[in-house]
Length: 298
Image 1 (cartoon, one colour):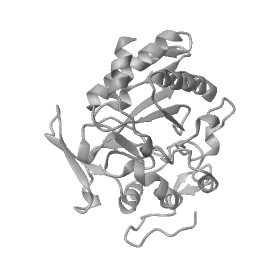
Image 2 (cartoon, helix red, strand yellow; image 1 turned 45 degrees about the horizontal axis):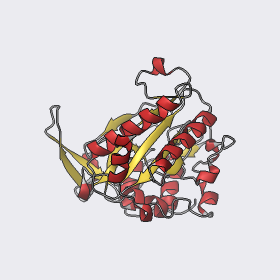
Image 3 (cartoon, helix red, strand yellow; image 1 turned 90 degrees about the vertical axis):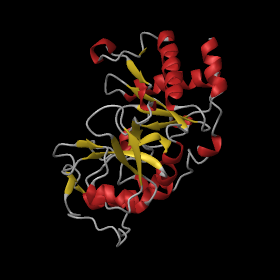
């Protein structure tokens, strides 16, 4: 974790404490992203980003920003996308892929890294499907049971899936796909699948938008698949106590006894010494249209 930040990206106020309980600083965050960037790069390269800026870390307020900050400079890769509504006709999104961009984001107070399902060059056609499993309680075990249900449903459609911790209390399941279907098609597929899974297990799972209507059930969220919707990237840090990391897992690790809090910016170096459970993620891209057709027939 002691690697120096490249001279081309100077971290301002490097000693500013972002996590008071642990004493983790802004520089600690930059050091983490520099350490993990070889693993992170494939998941952010040429990918559209939404910024969540938390300039005071855990202490202050955060705000989201889609338009590229002027302070990032004209050399920052961007993608301009027309807006369907609002006062701004188009938004110039930051595009990930370089360590310099990532460290510039850290310098702006970006703790988490929010990525779209589409790359800039193929927008709005995603290369993954994402399912966000959000338990009503803090019990991670609820999300684990839900994840195995979603995995089984995907398996019935012949789809290989990859789990990761959300960096919070839930789990994310990603399905790598070949570019082809639009974001709207991918979203409709995800909606149909979670509706089917929730209907089969109504006491445990739900697709209710209203938090009050969910009760103690796990919410199966398909909406990370919208064209400009985002999800936290694999290896993203979260603005949570202890600086947890959204960590790629093997399915063998998805157990009720797993404690996702153990994956943090200060412990993650040891994780990188182990076999990468997502090493074959992009080599496992699958055609989604046969699964879309099959699901419609069920």
